[in-house]
Length: 75
Image 1: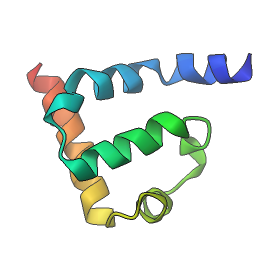
Image 2 (image 1 turned 135 degrees about the vertical axis):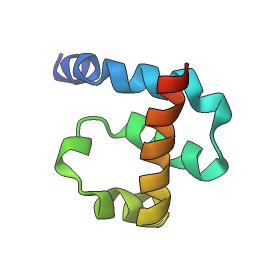
Image 3 (image 1 turned 90 degrees about the vertical axis):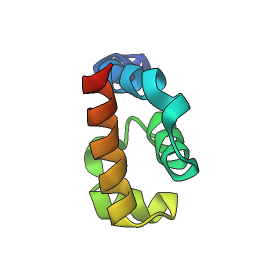
């Protein structure tokens, strides 16, 4: 039940990721996959945590976030 509630809270994020994932680079896909798999933990992670856990640089994570917002605004 708790996981379902968490997924509902993050539904807009998951929808955004799904709507533009065909435009992602391989690094973007790794970040997106991690976010989708660890939704309940994401609020507790810093950008450095997520970058380390996905084996990408913090700059790559920042670009992913900016790209996600940009792609969603264009669509």
